[in-house]
Amino acid sequence: MRLRPFRLFWFSRSLATLSFQALAVAVAWQVYSLSGRAIDLGYVGLAQFLPMLVLTLPAGQLADRFDRRRIIALCQSLAGLGALLLCLGTALGTLGRLEIYAVIALIGAARAVEAPTLAALLPGLVPRVMVPRASAWSASANQTAQICGPALGGLLLGFGGQLVFGLAALGLAAAAICAVLIPAGPKPFREPVSLASVLSGIGFVRRHPIVLGSISLDLFATLLGATVALLPIFARDILGTGPWGLGLLRAAPAAGALAMSLVLANRPLRPPVGRTLFVALFTFGCATCGFALSTSLALSVLCLSLVGAADVVSVVIRFSLVQLNTPDEMRGRVSAVNSLFVGTSNQLGEFRAGLAAAAFGAVPAALLGGVATVVIAALWMRWFPALRRLQRIEG
Image (cartoon, rainbow, N blue to C red; front, side):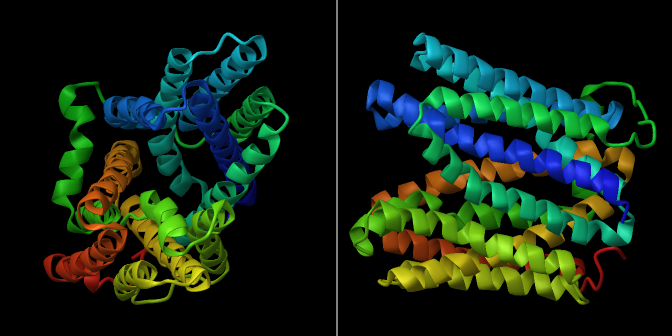
């Protein structure tokens, strides 16, 4: 593995994700402090979702036409500018809800462009055979940030929101510097810009069963298996615990994912990877069912840790399959399709879980999600036999 380029990539992603996670805690706290209305927290999510919906596919075209390192650095710099604006507005006492939504939309736009570019850049930094291990190390950065970022943001909030926003701005600036320092890769092929070119990632996915199966499996498994939105209900009403218990439940999937990503980074996946992928999905679904039926905090934390561990196995395999089955000149646009599907399924998955809980109760809603994930895995084994029979990721 060419260590220096990948290390710079790893540090860039780690610093950016840590900053985003800390920023999210401070923004949610500040918005709720200003209004006291839960719906305003929903508007924070909407302010991030709309730019993603509009910009993700064009971002793939940018990633295939221009220097990916510079795009990432620019996105992280814009997000850092947004964090700085939040810091100044908080310090001066001039920050209202509308101003926060506007800045969050700017940060959301930067992240919408950054995500597919990061995914497209990674395979070019390491030999093909090392892509699965590199993606596992990348996943470890993401999971570590998801554990440490909210905790750090919550701790620093005691000293004022401006401190969190200021440190997030510095972290994003450092991430941008790391991205710029990554050695330049091959000069991108600049295909003429057209609507057909922007949408060509969708056409590529449809023509390649391995890629289509991987992306669509991610879409439906995430859409139907999401339970994070229900954790406050389980913590208070079912497990009879307080905020500390909710914190354990929220941290459990990320902790399980981090542990598994470190295992995968040091012990490469062995054939047959197709079977491993579906075993991970069945484990994800069964662990979700176990969580739904649990009345013990310890058992619930264990089940959610298994959910996170199984999910990261699936993520590493699916990410590697998509990237290694896509030519470099198309990786940005195909990664954009993947990012759009993943982002949409995450948002809609939590919405689906909330609707199901309102209609049937939290336990049936979570149980339904776990069963649906198992059903989806079984159907995809039948509908995408090439994915089921796959021996090696890099093959």
